[in-house]
Image (cartoon, rainbow, N blue to C red; front, side, top):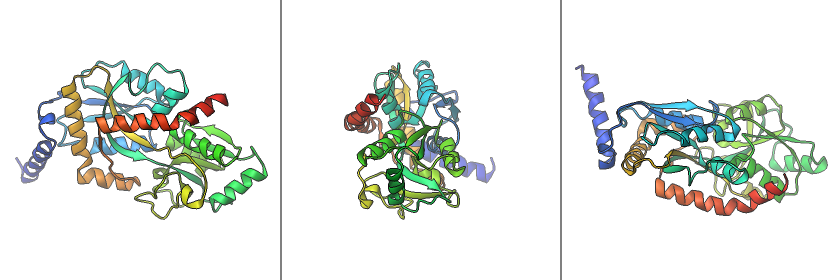
Length: 320
């Protein structure tokens, strides 16, 4: 064995040991397919692929991201829920969007009844983004234009029922604004629509602006605190605008009925992955930071989100 291979093997062994006994008891023999129910290029896809790239040495088999877009994430979620609960097929998704879509629509799957929650690896926070050439330099400029010509502005999000739509619509509702919503299939296409000036503004993850600073302008973050990476961007709260704080954890799920030992092993592996320098570096490239939560912590967060967003969902349902 060459020296570099020996060192690599030693690092891999250390990483596995760091994951704890739960991972040691779980030994997958085939590649793990992680269904991602959105198109490639979005924020969820970027975080999932960062995890997959950082899994070498933590997992004894490859973690393969499989994009299955459709129906605001429900197509892929339905396929993942129907998979054999043997640990070979999981789902990684924007859990906030999945939850809100299942609340807004009559779906056959939802985060609590159809899946075992493994862990959260990161978080996406929506922001108000406009094209670089937009006349709107501030959120106030945008609000003034919307009030001057109600319904004339077009705004984008990455699918009806997703957390970006809920965040954007709640902002419009709470500030007595009207605008035409234009849904796209994922964050990548939404970003492209803004860059191409097909829409006037968008509510999309602030991470989508990473690497596109010359094509996009971020006006504000829809969150209580500034972003850890883009701390130059003010929050809507700072600017004095009313809104509902709706972010989305990026979560790994397993089909309901998956063996608890498998869930524990996967949770330990994901924790170890999020603690690697490689994952942190890849996340930073994508304008994000690692944010691990255990399965139990993730479930508690999702149930709190369900309770807090129910009034917004009811209002969206009443609007048809």
